[in-house]
Image (cartoon, rainbow, N blue to C red; front, side, top):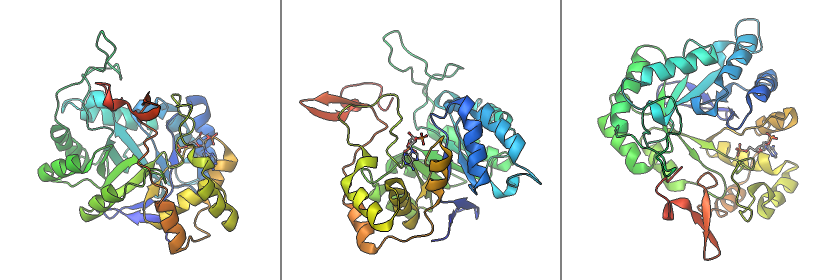
Length: 320
Ligand code: A2P
């Protein structure tokens, strides 16, 4: 396995990146330092994570000639937030991320979610009854301006996050520049085989977020299955002398899926990159595939009749 995939733009995207969601501003700078120091070349960011300015300080200090990594050897992703889908808001939102990150271009810019929220500077506009205030912008309109960002040289590639197959096809049908990447939740309990096959057919690379099951989410169901404690993964980990996290990340990169584990801990940041020095057998790859239970950690669940089901079954705010 090489340590990158080639996008439909010709860019090389490193298969392991550092995730920064839930990474507090005061800790993220150290995390970036620890990652760049040991050879990470890919950092995944988003405006809504509220830490791009801190990441920018780290980039200023550690990225560039004679520093830890040259800008041209670093792959940086950011994402357009839901309140910025209006065609008149897209470029300003991109420029704000660039300014915060202290960069002159992004390697990849994604539409974070297909749903537009009401325009404005409150990232989670609410109705009086506390449900989300949605906007009416079609993501195809947003996409047209994403294409402009490429033409203007602000971003090298554009893509989608949290879009399903139908929504991807819808964007492609209207696109002059096809999406290069789809980023979605993906791990051994949500293997996403059909969606990945669909993306491959249309030339999109796939990035797996929450590849370790996102155990530090602030909303956790007390009874949810804990991926990092899965007995089958543990057996494979013991067999290879690796950690369960490394097994799950190896499985992704070995099938050509980019993974962006988040960590603030130097040891775990290092461990998560050390997945290119061993191979899972075909049988082992298959075993991991059978652990699928279409389980989404990201969408909050409610308990109905003793079973956890995604909140969309009951709630108008799906998937928020
Ligand atoms: P920490 O930041 O303290 O290392 P995901 O990327 O799926 O959202 O998961 C991130 C969570 O997994 C964080 O709570 C992070 O904790 C933890 N984590 C990251 N790497 C590892 C690892 N190698 N082993 C165990 N837990 C990890």
